[in-house]
Structures are given as C-alpha cells and as structure tokens.
Length: 338
Image 1: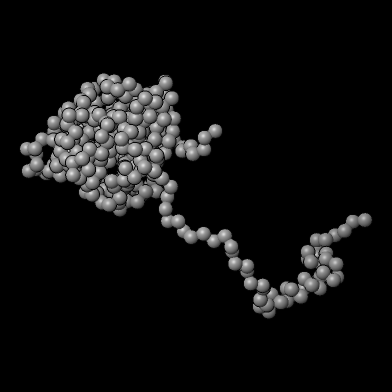
Image 2: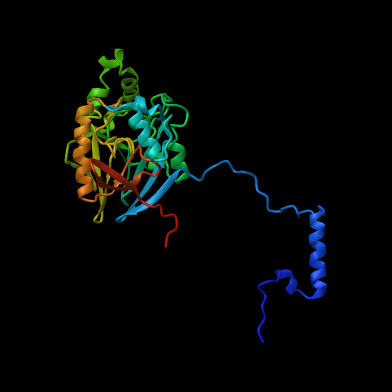
C-alpha cells in the first residue's frame, strides 16, 4: 500500500494528541506567549585584552631559532617613505593586499639562534629611543617571555648601525645590556654612524643613538668583511645602499639555512613586489635598489628561506620571482611539536 504525503503539512503526520499540542503551542507563539527565561551562563570569562609572549621558535638543522620582537614600528603615511612612484600607486598596492594606506607599520623581528654552544642574536631594536613612538623597545621583555636572559647572549650581529637595529645594545645611561656579548658589525657602518662631525647635520639623531650604543662597547666590537664566515654558521654578504656598510647574513646549521635580510627590503609588498621603489631612509637609494634586485633574485632562484627584520611577525618565509618583482610566501607557524 502506498502513501501520498505530498499534500500534507509535516504536523498532520503527528498523532491527534500531539497535533493538538503542536497547534496550541503555535497559537501561543502567535499571541506573543513568553518562553521560559534563558539560564544564565556559568562559564563567562572576562576579556583578556592581552596576547601570549612575543616570541616564536623553530628548528634550523640542529640549531634552535627563537624570534623575539622589539615591538611594532609605525612609519606613518607610506606615501612619504616609499618613493619613486605617485603616492596613489603606493596606496593602491597596499589596498589590493588588504593593508591600510594611512599608516604603514613595520615589525622588528630579532632572531636569536642557539647553535648549541653559543647564542647569536641578530640586531637589537630601538632600545630606549622613542623616535617612532611608544610601541618599540620591547626586546628585553620579549626575551624574558621566551625564558632568555641578556647575560646568555654570546654574540650580537648587526646588519647596520641604524637606530632601530643597534638601539638595544646599551641602556640610556650607557650600560651594556648584554654584558657577555661580542658585537659584530661592518667597519664602514661603524665609522660612518659614530662620526661625531655629523652631529650638526640632518643625521644627528641617528648618529647620537649609534654613538650611545656602540661607543660604550667599542672594546667588544669585531668587524667582519663581505663573504666572511666570521662565526661558525654565520656568513656576511654585503648589501650596500641602505647604509654604506649594510649586510645580510647566511645562517646555517646541519645542511639547513636561511638568509637574515636586515633592511634589504622593508616591506613584503612595497619593496618586494616592486623592488625598484625607493625608500626614504636609504643612504643611497639607487645603490639600495641594485642590491635589493640582485640579492632577492639570487635568494629566489636558490629557493633560500628568508628571515626579514621588518616583515609581518614572525617574518620567516620564502621568495619567488613574480613579474618584475618578487612574491613573499610566509611560512606557516608550527605551534604544536609532533
């Protein structure tokens, strides 16, 4: 025997008693009958308004890399810092990548590499200077969150002597913050940015901050040269233009490596997808473009992973050629060890 339910409402299939209850309930709702009050949740939690510690770890061969942050560094209107094209072009590049065009914010990603027998830190952030606002100067707090002490650092490798890279070496009163660390930097950058004769010119703030951080540790400074492996697993590669002695570094352990880019490119979109843009803080913008195009091409062709000081946290990923520029692919963060 077949049944045709196509002309019936679902509630017509209920037994008569259930159907009467269903219709009564529906009538009550139509008349605005109140439902029982909801039971208050017993699991309410206040808004934490905080983040976890500002550090991230990953393995490089047999070495462990801990990326700590000195805090975000806001530059303001990107049209004032990224030059060589109309401002609307800069704004359009940001908008098409879902980034704000009113204020470009750089990160300060500082890798500390534990090679097993030594801890090597690359750059040190803004330190006590608040030239770019209150969010910088977080290095020591980030290290504490990562369970690392300043006295544990054996070496500090400086890509160059700009204020946001050597600013965390000493305190405001001239006390070295990393008492056991040897300092490595190019002699050209040291000589240029500690030159007291420049204190009366437009570079005064940068020179003053470089002197405040480098002169108290002058006896601990070692100069490296282009292509030199000045520490086991750390090789210097000259990348002049941003400053006269700017370098990037090849960091290697047990057959694995990455390139620490320093300020070869400041932004994953603006100076990477269009590496021929110029940056307002470059000492020699034309030379900086040449270094950027040459080295990014080499890194992309060799599929060398990169660690960028200023890219979005934590700044680790890969580069690939894309048209006249490059595309940055951030590596997924791995927070669960298996």
